[in-house]
Length: 114
Image (cartoon, rainbow, N blue to C red; front, side, top):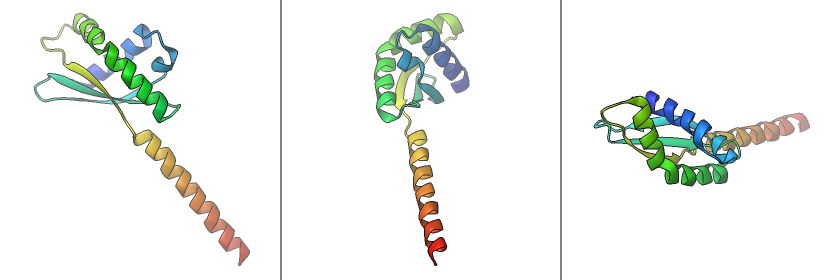
């Protein structure tokens, strides 16, 4: 069910959101509660945390309309309430990569100077 909600929500964002920056947000994962009453959809953005958090705010503002549209499109008995949350994992991955690159450069500089 999570994959279905995620796919349809991502499609809805691409076709229904007026804001280009929100349309550029990525929705990498959705967790649906066992009772199907709530779906938490995670949001990342290639422009970083600030852009992702702005997209989360706009998506949560549009969540009620999105849920109504998804209910009509999916024809499920229960369509979960949609809650969008910032997913820091992409930004954390970039920070880790930057730290590893810096450590490699520093290590390489020490070995070359001996």
